[in-house]
Image (tube, rainbow, N blue to C red):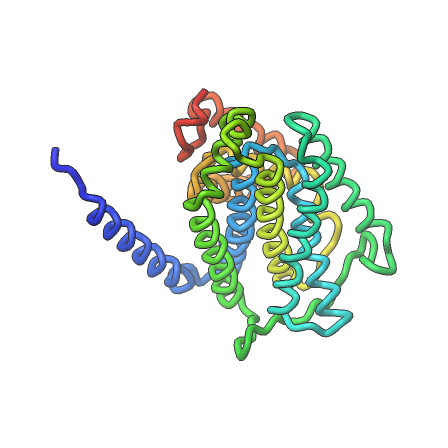
Length: 315
């Protein structure tokens, strides 16, 4: 069987990426229905969220059930900055991402020595604290009614109004997430994250500052959640605490697990499957989490590493 050289493999990889970019750019020409484009835009939001969560869960091995809180921090930051302080969307987007990163770091520092179930419980507590504050701090967050009337976003001379406009905005943000994570994972930082996931004690013996790397992974993953929250705020033109509940964090984790952990593109498959499943069973809203749970259990039984996950997660 002929061997493929490294140079040929790189060329093939580049060609596949170019083909992917071309294919994604013509999606609005294929899907003209605004309802279906809305579903595609929702998929893009979850892709950004789950690629960031995959850095925390799939590459570093930290089970976080508070990812929706950082999603909410980005959403509320953009809503407040644009409606009350008149900031542009681009400025609000950057600040929202950095604010989520800072909160991720603030949570990561005191929990850096905590492992397993205890870390998971602390992230749940943080997520619920955020939701309760957003619901109770009425003068600042608008309470249960949230913040409405978020302005139409503009990116330089581009006014983003239609579903197609939001699709291309989401595609830009998802592309940025993918490229920046690819660079990060391919660096020594990415190798350190994987070492911590495989065996934290062995990684520390090898000279890796496991606490610092865990904080870094958690903070960067939170940054992407903040960007997704900023996108959600301008897309919906309103933001409420109900969008950032615990079950939202659970859904993100299930998407990552179904697609496959420890692979940069694998969670995208989980996002598409779970989003289409929830849309298909929307009439059975009372059984939504039950259906999602059945899908996850089925995948774990027959393909424990996820649909496109690495072999490291088979056992």
